[in-house]
Amino acid sequence: MPRNQQILLDNRPQGGATAANFKLVASDTPALQDGEVLVRHHYLSLDPYMRGRMNDSKSYAQPQPLGEVMQGGTAGEVVESHHPKYAVGDKVVGFGGWQEYSVVNATQPGALKKVDTTQVPLSAYLGAVGMPGVTAWYGLVKIIAPKAGDTVVVSAASGAVGSAFAALAKARGCRVVGIAGGVDKCRYAVEELHFDACLDYKEHTDTPAMAKALKEACPNGIDGYFENVGGWIMDAVMLRMNAFGRIALCGMIAGYDGAPLPMANPALILINRMKIEGFIVSEHMEVWPEALIELGTLVATGKLRPRESIAQGLAAAPEAFLGLLKGRNFGKQLVKLV
Image (cartoon, rainbow, N blue to C red; front, side):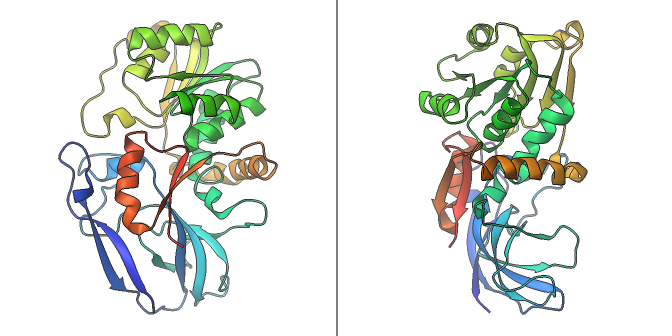
């Protein structure tokens, strides 16, 4: 059996996360039992939600255990199988974590899924045609529920969720405005992702400035907002929300280091009779088949071509993850292991 490199969560962050919170180790891969398959990971997904799990605090999911492999989505290839439904060479996605190989009990529902890479690249199943894409789909379709002509806004617009959100919203006839960090990301959002406009939070650096820019970009106000960031950006968007506006609350990356994120004008929720709903996409597995069909079609037909930031090798994962939390990635952040 192959030697397996792994990254463990060694200790919990005190404030901001650092590379010292992680530990690189190697171990022997155990022999397979009946019903198990051995997967060699080609790609590891890095996602902002992982930062919250590093804390030992109340959240929607259990904290990442200390001394165990960091959890995360993976895409790879079956290299040995003791399960009749999986053959050597099958391309699969799962939750194998920050390691080069994983032994998966394939008898457990949802533990592993075969994917077709003839029209959709394997890496896309961790981004546009995976959890980030379905996250965008659920927030848009089930919470914002736009009609043609609505104006919708998304923060972290150039990332994996934001790029999918744009394609899905444009397909529904919406005006789509993004918020992203830097001139290059905003240009990419408009020129390649087909946003109608994208606002640079590094140029509009406080709530009044961002609210003014949103007024110009959204002359008819904002009907729906997909929130990935929180903090002063959310305050600015709320100032421009229309009556009966809907906010899909997906992430609050501005507060992942543990500091509270006060809301400046909560009375706007009442004044505008807004709907704000937080959601965790793994709690809505019933929508995944429908969402993945639409997302896969968008990728296969070239209507959704998101960028990927790819770090090379397992040892690069911690720094790539820390960069993701600071917005250094361009598109979906992956680690290539093969």
